[in-house]
Image 1 (tube, rainbow, N blue to C red):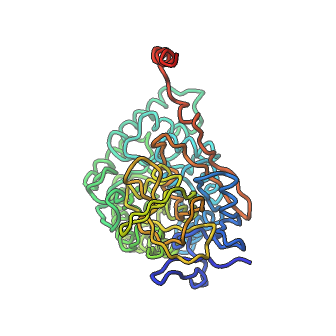
Image 2: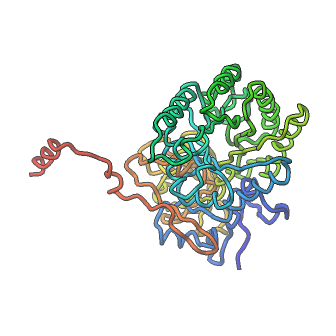
Image 3: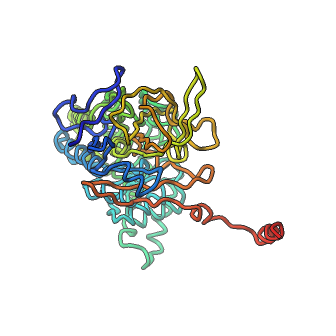
Length: 482
């Protein structure tokens, strides 16, 4: 027999069974949808005992729940079908977590993929994703990345004048010097979208606010006529759409409603230049629950808002409904993953603080030190033990700021306990590092009691694989050992 999963409140605990009987929106859950407490009083995810996973795959460990990820994909896709009267496409913002397995899963659910580098493009292609469902973003794409994208046949979201002019050059070169080595679609006009900053503010961290005028991303709206004029004179570039993104970890719906009106105005302006623009990409940005105090809208509520806003704006201006694209990242995968650690040393400072250290930290989760992000935690091997302790969870890195959670409410702990931090699917592995030469953790995909390795744990050999030691230093090192 299993029990419901406890969560924190001011009084100590509440239960997921108290929630509505409606299908839960993954972004509104702190833990994966399959999380529960098993007979051994252990946390279980995807039918797998977290303690057993640590014994088999070692610690720290990213544990990705396939059911939660697929559920989020389906809720986005089905909600657009329900609320938007025109064609729609959901695109996963893979910067949240880009690896072969994740790309393959979201593609199998009918989603496209938003990529922001040549490396992310390469990974998606190697995962078997159709290049026509790939969209390349980025504010400073290299010429090599632009050529790679053009040759692959993906759509390129143009961020600035340098990219726009470089793409025109690349397209002209492809047509003037055709190569039998190039794929057939490289002879076609390069598909581009234009990214603009809409000037819409929202309440989120400064580092993840991207829609304001003061942003490194996108053309200023005042440049729109010049951009459209350029595109109308360069048939080698096929401008198919417009893009805007207002930020990340957003709990408000009104800014997305405002964005729709702005983007339809841009769409109207494009018609004066005869451009075949039939796509509006509204970005993503829906937030998730990192703790029970977070209160983001559901996936369905977000989709309903943006869909109705675009439709209303189009109706008001008698504009045909464009293909509507959205780019969720965090809200697709954030709540699908937990990170499991092993507790090590304890330090008690009387009347000040108690520290417990784990065998990971800022190298596998840089968000607390970067964004001051707040998480919660559980002792995964004693889930029903009362939460009697207030402790600070510290990482093992040689950095005073390497603290994962301050003042966490936990059960009394012991060295060797399994500590789990939920909601670590977005920007944890993808922003991980080898700080202090610590190897990156492994990641497993769990589903129906089965765990499959999707990222192998790095070794010390991996850390020095790209190192090169000049021969004169090697000889000097050898002499020093004599």
